[in-house]
Structure formats: C-alpha cells, structure tokens
Image (tube, rainbow, N blue to C red; front, side, top):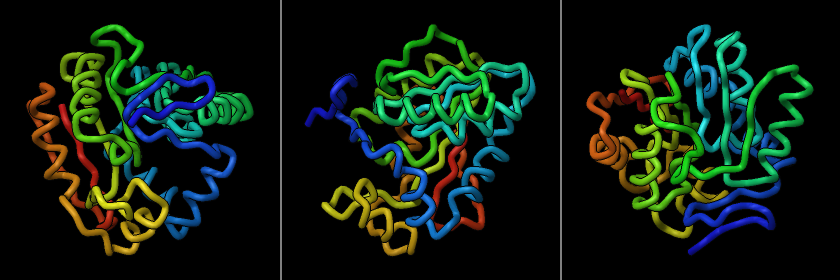
Length: 217
C-alpha cells in the first residue's frame, strides 16, 4: 500500500498526520517517558561538536534540536515523509534558534551524497516500515554515512504485524506496557543492518526494557 499526504512523496511506509498533536500523544502514550528515552538515545549516540548528523523520520524535530545543541557548529539535518511534521519541526527550530535543515524526504531515497554524515539517528520510526522498505532504507543510511560513521536507532523492543501491532495507537500502548507479542526488533534489524553493509551491530541494554537501542557501524 502506498501512503502520501497532499504534498508529500509516495512511500510504502506509514506516514503520520496530526503533527500538532504528535508531541502530546507521545507524552501521554509513553506515560511521560519520551524525554528519558530521547536522552538515552543521545547519550548512546554521543554526537560530538562539529559532527554532521542526520535524523531520519524526524517527526516534529525534537530529537534533531537536542542533537544540534550537542554538535554546536556542526550540521544537523532532519527528514520526514510527512509535510505536516516537517512544518512543525521548522517552527520549533526557528523558535529555539536552532539552524537545522528540515525537509520532506524518504528513508528509501535520502537526498544527500554518499559519505555525508558522521551520525544518523532514528527514533520510534522503523516499526512503521515493512521489512523490504526497512532493508532499502538501511542501505541508504549506510550509503550516506562516512567510513566509520555510526547509526543509532531506538524503537519498540517487539514488532508485530497484527492489526494491533506497534504501528497502531493500541499497539503503541501494548508495547509501552510490555504486552507486545511478536519478533524482537533487535532480531529483525540485525540481519538487515548486516546486509546493508554494517559490520558492527550491537543491541545496548538499558533500564527501558520495552524499547530496543541498536547501534551499528
């Protein structure tokens, strides 16, 4: 199935709407844990001053803005399939005074040259993609990473292809509460990452048991 918005590109991944309610929904559905999860992702990704960073599936831009504070004079870009999300991200960035390039673009067609970034991040986005699109998107991420560059992803610990899977609001709640049933996200992503050209893939245990943190180089 193809998804798009009125002005967005077509993609087989799920495109989120209702951007102005997205942050509130994230806070409610995670019982206030979204900020802690984001801070853990940033801690593990370890963005350094001067680095070039891409946030894939940037949503309303909160992660990219936080990363920009870490890289200082470095460059941060954010892409998302949803024009509504990108519009809100631009507004938030302008209000924050952050110089970030947000644009509407797809993970399967990242609009940057080879070897552009030191770090690529992804937060609660990969579960919205069918497996074939995940594979294509991860190859694109590997392409735009510099040699030795790193990819840091955070997502639900379990993925499900049922109607109540983690791509749906009820599935989000089940995952947060630890009731999700399905393949472990780490088990699903590891072979896809290796096939995409990443040689070092590690799942990082944290106190957030219902979420998976995966780093690859």
